[in-house]
Image 1 (cartoon, rainbow, N blue to C red):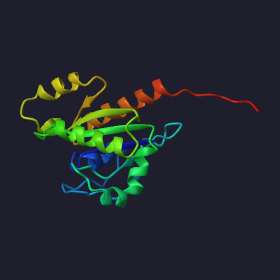
Image 2 (cartoon, rainbow, N blue to C red):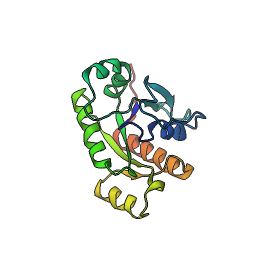
Image 3 (cartoon, rainbow, N blue to C red):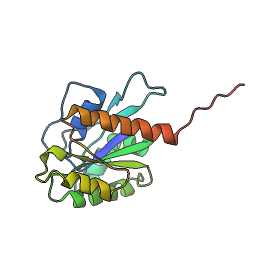
Image 4 (cartoon, rainbow, N blue to C red):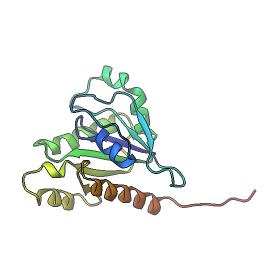
Length: 173
């Protein structure tokens, strides 16, 4: 299971649809995704890799809202890998990373392996900025959910993670 996490409006839903080749795209608004939305990354993979889109986080998320989003946050806690999506074009993207990390710790998901996905790389003014930020965060990837080649690169990044962290076992009983 892979769960998309990140600050609200970072492009999680758009990215999920690009990865899973779904037709519906995200909305440019707060809390566009309120319930967990689960799709298969690729029907051919064995075992199947399930992708779960989740609610966007905000700074100082009230506990009453955390309780309201319990279903989507449970998907996060049960994930094998988190895709922490960050809007790299936002001036406060570093604070958004800290906020998401704080919420993950608060809900008990702070130790789940994650890949930082610097999204909206096509929207930064300085083209080398995305590469610099990516280099400062080993294992991360800078992409644009709107560019199909970038979705392919991220899909390969996810496949690579699972191929190096999981192994196949055959049991005879």
